[in-house]
Image 1 (cartoon, helix red, strand yellow):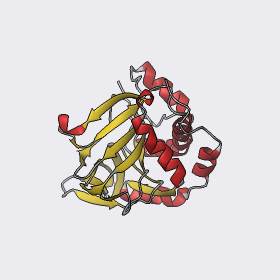
Image 2 (cartoon, helix red, strand yellow):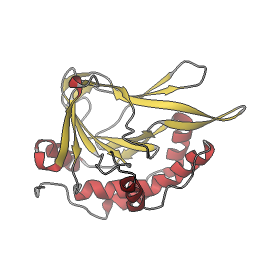
Image 3 (cartoon, helix red, strand yellow):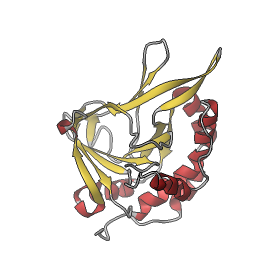
Image 4 (cartoon, helix red, strand yellow):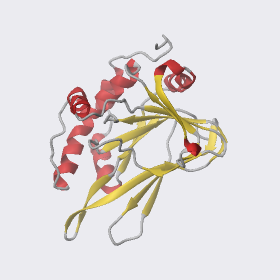
Amino acid sequence: MQTSLAPAASPAPARKVDALDWPRIETDLATRGCATTGVLFDPEECRALAALYDQAGHFRSRVVMQRHGFGQGEYQYFANPLPLSIAAWRSALYERLAPFANAWAAAMGQPADYPVEHASYLARCHAAGQLRPTPLLLRYEEGDYNCLHQDLYGDLQFPLQLTVLLSRPGEDFTGGEFVLTEQRPRMQSRAEVVSLAQGEAVIFAVNQRPVAGTRGTYRVTMRHGVSRVRSGRRHTLGIIFHDAR
């Protein structure tokens, strides 16, 4: 059972999402496969979200990364019903990202049929047997890290996701940089390190993204991870738009 300490829903997510610099985000996604948002959550909201980690009733499962060769640290997947705030952010962000997802799908020769509303997309996931919610909280202590990976979870995959940094870099923790790699055809992989402020998110490709080349559009494969935390504790919120099997 969820407690009253969960952040409440409000109209703020939709307003804040609409106010983002979407032309700049579109350009960054097209050129780099990732884009920062600027600060979405204030420090109090960040602390409230991070505090949920110790409230077991919010979560459906806990993963200790070193047990599975994923890295070192741990994370927990939220259970349904999601905290109202997280559900509101997930829906608002999906609606702005769906046009990007359809454009990417069309460029890669895939069906460009992501629906406008997140509820409709979740219904599609559930009909395909992907019933488990995927938003998660991650906790890293000194020495922890996350190996490069993709969050796929089933046959249906929304091509974009985001991570929100809830801790204060340089104060709550040091190290722990968000890292992306891009595997390009017949070329060496390219790495990108993304610096975030507390409450800021990075939007990035889940799996593949289209890139315009001299001979047309080709696909590159993306993976993401977190470098070693050198001191302190680092919390992040992950928002993935497809559900899991």
